[in-house]
Each structure stands twice: as structure tokens, then as C-alpha cells.
Image 1 (cartoon, rainbow, N blue to C red):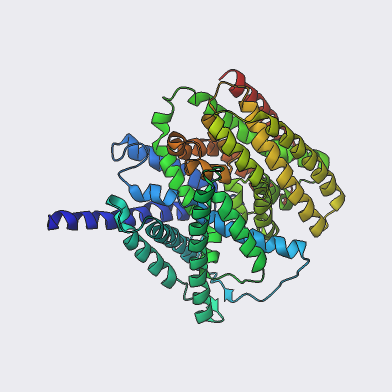
Image 2: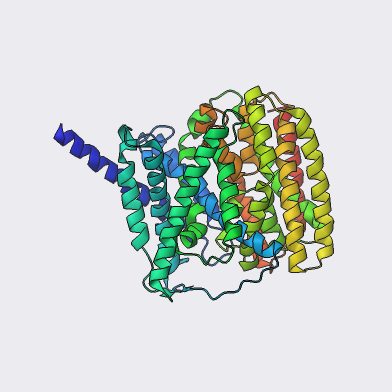
Length: 512
């Protein structure tokens, strides 16, 4: 019996290091492939993640869902941790914008510019590896606190997972980066970890308390708390935890999710009605992304990436663009604006998640309120586009117009898309998955992953969410071309892709 226990302990440790080998090289390779170009590494993470998950199943090493590699699913479910960081930063930026607060305090860290791996400097490498350990350590600590010590099986190792993850994350700081006060920097990192864990626990308990009244997901309450804390501590300079997760948290989480999604490719196609879901997800990505860009170009008369990248990341809660913007792939202006735009639509999620929660209980979309909200969204979008047109390059006016656009187009996309899908024969839980993937909506993804729409949807969502990312070569190619053209997006291809999206969405609803 002792030998069996020792082997089990060894297997758990092996799984831990296997996950490290799976994910970190994937992120590094993606950065190497796009090195010297203007394209985002998330594009490559999509391809590598799906391919690796599919190969593991195809050669018989694993089965769909990768239960043989439990740490992959463990990491895939840390989506909410990466989002909490974005919400906090968004709360800070909102407070600065709305309160007219100019905060240009000197940074306490000067990163090392030494290129360790092609496309990744030394400090960025530390950020990527530290993000891995932070995500797995914070998730392990949170589960340990929430589940207690009476658990069995894999959950029994939560204390060990938390210990290894957090200890390594704390000490993993680039020694060649210039840090003005090392002790303060480390203490900031510890405090940031504690705050993230606190937000996770409080939001989970609030969600449980409200569940009998309305089944709002944990991500909604986590967003509200973290954005509020960001607004209160608007002058907080980032410690190592926030810096790492803001830079690499989303890419690492997406890499794990794409692996799980890739492993389900074979099974998912056999499910009845899945073709319509995947077709809508694929062409919906073209329709909502390039349709939104086309509206901005046509009415607001701007094609610059400083507006398009954060505007579309925020208005669609788009995970790929969010990660690319916050990592600085589309320039510093887009990186600064993105957290604001990501947060703005989430204040409207009190309507989104409340109506979806009621719809989930009914089993069909609640059409009356949906129609009202879509009309409000259309009005806000029109107002935003007119204000953006009148901004004439003024930073503050552009930001305020983009805030309106993020809110308005988000409502149009979420509820307009669900209303369109209600015209098809797709079941409601499948239609939510389809809409989540059609706009790469991180919030809806996290809600479905949290079983807001049942366990079957929770199991399928990594695959459904992953497949439209095959459209992302087009998305990131277009944004990459914009970067090469001094930030100006090519106009005619955008209109063409939007038209293809319209045709594809109609086909998926009525003929797929």
C-alpha cells in the first residue's frame, strides 16, 4: 500500500511538470513564430493547442477531455483568475478617465531587454513562467480553502499544488530587471495574490447565496469586486503578480483550453445539431468582428487600430484581442485603452446574466426583455459611432466614445445573436455556446464553464469556444496588416469579410 501511495504522489508531480512542458513552450514557440512581425502570438497558440490536444487523442495517449492529464483541465478552469486582473486594471483606468486623474508616477521596475529566446526577452520569459505557477497556485489555494480537507482523489493534492505554485511564483523574479525597492516589490506580489484569492472566495460565496434567487455566475461578482477595488486603488503600481498575469495570464489559460478543446474534436462532430453550432460560431466570428469594424469605419470614419483593437476587444469581450491588446501587441495606446473597454460592457452584464439565468431556467430565450435590450444596444452603438466621428483624434473623447461603443455593441452582439439563434432549431444551451464562440466572449465562456447552462455544456465549451479561433488567422492577419500600415486597417477586406459573415450566419440558422 505504501508503494502504491508513493507511485500516486510521483504521478501527481509528473503531471505538474508535464503541464509546464505542455503550456510554457507553446507560448514561447508562438512568440518565436511571430517574432519580427506585427502579428499576435495568440494566433499560433490556437493552432498549437488544438493540434496538441487532437494528437494526444488520435495516437491513443489520452481520451476526449484529457482526463489522463488532469492538470490541463485544472489550468483551463483558471480563466476567472486572468479576468480578475484585467478587471482590476480596467477599474483603475476607468477611475483615472472619469475622475480626470493624471497619474504618471515613475515605475519601480525597468525590465531587462536581453533576448533570451527569439521574440521573448528575459523579463517576459519570467512573466510567462511565473504566470503558469501563479495560476495553478492560486487555483490550488482557492480550491483548498473552499473544499476543505475532506476531499478525496486529485483534490486531496490541492495543498501541494498551492504550495509548489505559489512558492515558485514568489521567488521567480528576473534578477537582471532593475527594481528600485525589491522588498516592496515582493510584498506587493504577495498582497496581490491574497487579494485575488479573496475575490475568488467572496465572489463564489455571493454567487451561492444568490443562486436560489437568480443563478448569476461567479465571474459576474468577481468582475464587480475587482473593478471596484481597481477604482479605489487607482494609484496602485503593479507588483510581480499583476505584471505577470496581465502579460501572460490569458495566453497560458487559452493554451490549456485549446488543448482540452482539441481533444474533443472527434467526439463533438458526432453530436446531433453540432454542425449548426460550429457553423454559426465560425461565421459569427466574421460577422460580429468585421461587422463591428465596418460600422466604425463607415460611420465613425476611423480605421486606426488604437480605436479598433480596444473597441472590438471590449465590445465583444473578445478573449483573443483582449490578450493581444494587454500584452502590447497592438501598441501602447491600445494596451492602455483595452482594460477600460473590457470592463465597461461588464457593468451591463447584470442584465446579460440575469436574463440568461432566467432563460436557462425556462429552457428558452426570454424574448421580451431581449428585444428591449437589443433596441437599447442599437441606440447606444449609433450614439457611440457619432461621438467617435466627432472626436477628431482627441484622446479623451475617443475613449469615452469607445466606452459607449463597447457597451452598445456588446448588447447587440450577445442578445442580437441569441435572438437570431432562437429562430433556428438549436437548443438554448447549445445556442449560448454558439454565441459565446461566435464573439469569443470570455465572460460567457467562463459562465458556461461554470455550469450555468448544465454539465454537458460545461464539458463541450472548450471545444466549441476553440473552433472559431480557426478564423483568427484572418482576424490577426488584418490587425497585423494594420500595424504594418502605421495603424490603419485595410478597408475593402473588412467589408468583404463582414459580408461573408452575414451569408454564413444566415446559412447556419436556416440551412445547417
